[in-house]
Image 1 (tube, rainbow, N blue to C red):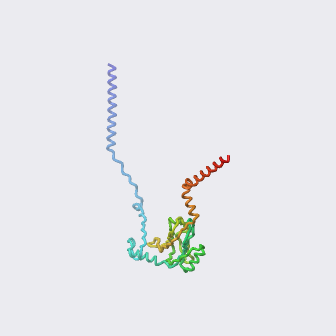
Image 2: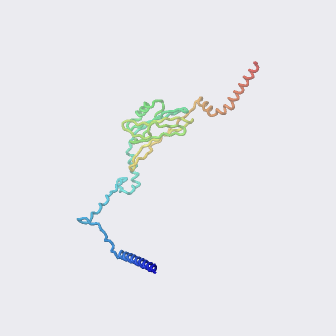
Image 3: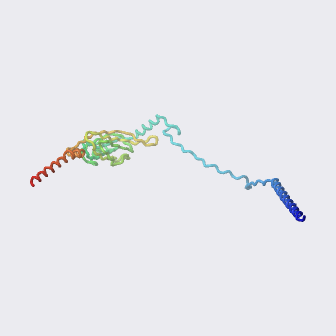
Length: 268
């Protein structure tokens, strides 16, 4: 009986402890739900009023593009008549002058010659021709042509495939009033017969603030390229050496060796 009473006492004590813990937890959860939310914190305003507003971004003023021609508002394309007028004005600024150039009438096959052109706004045709002769020498005929002269000019010499042409001076050069301006090329004949060299004279003019090449004249000169007899033989041999070797040289060599061998046997 004593043991039963002791067990009952332990059970009653355990039940009381569990009930106390449950009551404590219930009261704690209820107090946390009824608690007031924390007050909102605001940054204190500085003394003297609200903070200054940030400075506005710097204003960018767009650059105005120049009008392509007088009297035309910016942003609108120039009328077609104004563009023609601008080209005509650029060409009217050119001045009259002369160019002299040598033109060989005949060249030997694979021969190289020097061809030069000089331009001047002041020298007369006779003086300019003598100036070219002093510079290049030789006996080639010298031709003089009246052309318009620009402060910036370009020349082109073409004659392919009959001629191999190498420029010795810049193709585009500034032109001086006081001294002649020279262009020079080396020309090598690579085909026989009558062939043409084309020399183009170009002025570089400014239109709408840009530079453009303007062709002034094209000078055509025919040159007879001849070939000598030794050159013909050399060309034939170089192009047919295999045929000659198989049909002439080898049979002749075999015949000569066979005859020599027969003569040698007879002597024995």
